[in-house]
Length: 71
Image (cartoon, rainbow, N blue to C red; front, top):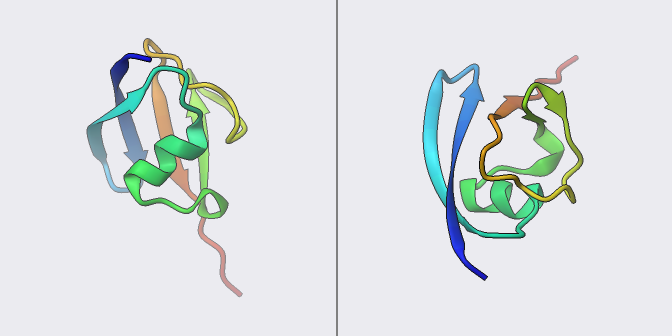
């Protein structure tokens, strides 16, 4: 499989980065590459929430929202 670069925007941190992953990787793998716990974030692909096992599409706009909990 080929490698591909995707751009990821992390909301709340106003941070945008480029990540290299294998074509066919899912969002769980992408989050692992970013050092993020899937339980603590919501991933949006083109503005819509996606499950961790969804395959990353190269041309998608990827946003990550950190979930904050407290009590």
